[in-house]
Length: 635
Ligand SMILES: [Mn+2]
Image (cartoon, rainbow, N blue to C red; front, side):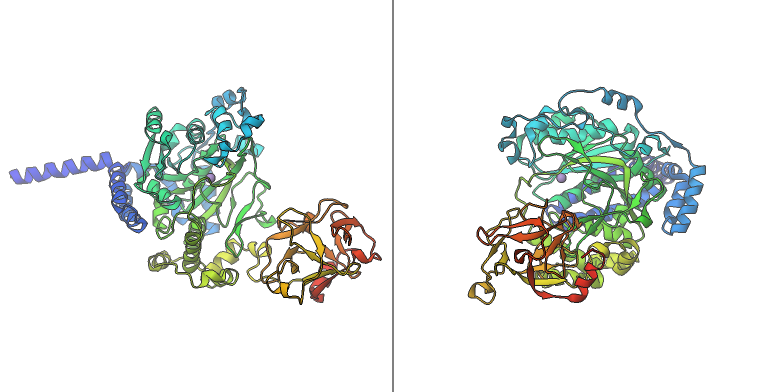
């Protein structure tokens, strides 16, 4: 009898403990932290530990009645929201079935509007020359002097689409852990990130802010930071025990997180008006949606706040795996431009994801090192494995794009290896297109990817071909996997002078010249600065068609020199027409490329096709392509 009573007591005790601790998974988070610490440097072990604990935590949370009730009808919808038709039907149900509310903090907005002073309203700080000194950049990659002179609580301009101001979101939203990894971040820039999140987020939605220090050595990030953050009960600081790199630092933060949602931010950001509810709302409606805010630009010199060029665009990549942005195609444009839109890949460090979904997806591949490629991995994975990804125009976060990265990033090998891992695990036969452009990747070891392939298998993920056809179907228009044939290539010889276009003496941005043609001479073997490609994009680049550089012939006026600039792929002032009369016509300025034999300069001039110095001969041409290019111009 006594034994029976004791057992009963034990059972009751356990049940009480479960009710107290399991809903917020507090103990589990501690457990996981320890696991990661124990894993030490080895990301695989750390990730594995987190994954293991996650399974238990998820099961526990599902058993907790409170949480079950909170998600209500939404839970049903969340699971079913993959089929588009189902989703639309269910959303209609949600609109009528669940209450929505205005999440704006109208008082705070009013207070912000009245602020004046340095950098307030996101205005550029008026710099003196002394403040421009280079030392200010050396440690941060942006002007920390200016940052220090701007309030930590500075106001930002509300540059959202006007419709955002009246949008309502679900009354019951999941809360979030905001994870902010940092390494040797500046004091005021880090604090302003935290202040902006606290100031512009409904308190009820912030479970915690987790600052994850990747082994910084700057003094202000040690005790001083801890003392400062002690005033904010929601902020906690985790630290790695050695330099782990961005990816594992984010994973450490994520594995310690207790919120329903994990929101990753960079350590030099400013959250704008009502940035959080629009993100959480999408996740509440479909827990398998990963959402990204619009990323605005905080100038690294004067801290002025403005949109990126083009503002709302889809995330994409080229076949060397450089991140690119492409316009939203008409088919995907919403009647209300402030509505969320689908994006094939995210830019990187700013996104929100349901915590359990993140771990179901395996978090980041623990085999990824330091930095780079992880945005592709998580993006491909979420799309191919039954989720989706959206950019949210009503959620805006400013980010300081640094002038340069102020600390040593051991990229090179690890970036290549990361990209190879992503290609090997997720990109199927499309990986070949990368290896064609990056032959050095072909035989590079990606390490052991068996666990990642198994995950892909277990989650029943779709093929990369599906991803390219259904999600990134517009990408090939801008970045075709197979480069269409060039229109002309080889040396460009001037008829009047017999000289060739040459980039020899030019750094990027300096004017092109004509020089003695080198083809057939000894120099040509090692010096191919006279080989150019008139590409399918109708721009002209150094290099032969298989190996073009990313610099383009660029002219700004009908009399300007012709210089090499970064190719923007948007035609405009880099668009050229090679006409039958052998002139190189520049439609935007209505002028033609000309040269001067005596000073060897190349410049734009009023078109005069009978002038031999305006006639140019490409070594090779593809007449079909040329004719196609010239179909629609007045020749
Ligand atoms: Mn950054």
